[in-house]
Amino acid sequence: MVEKIGNAEDIKSLIGKKVTIYIMGEFGFPSSHQVKIINVKIAPYAQYPEAITVYFRKPRQRNDRGFVVLPHRDFIIWDGWLEVNDEMYVSKEEKEDVTTQKSLLCFDNQYTITALNSVNQKPVYAQFESKEDI
Image (tube, rainbow, N blue to C red; front, side, top):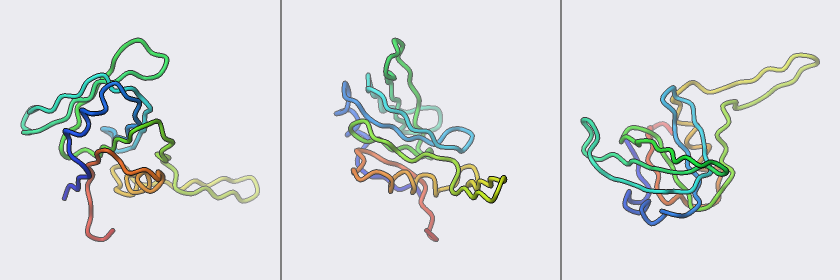
């Protein structure tokens, strides 16, 4: 089941503002970006009745970029530039000369939960898969 916080129309109020975006990549690992929103479009895309297209500009860059947020993709947007925990490795153990890192599997819901809990600010908009056992 996909949970949503806020309304997709709320993203349009962020045009021209600095925001932090968290998105689950196509290969199942998260990334966060501090950007300035240039434009937002909410329209049908392929077989989906509603998809969010976000155009943005990264700091110290000239060209605008964009991506399409489909209904099944984890996506969170906060107002302002924030430090979001999107680390792939959950824990790190060091014993003498050996370092062991434990990571989550791709598309794990725990990535999104960790990102939401790492920021004290409520997101403007969020959509993510929720599971009953969490």
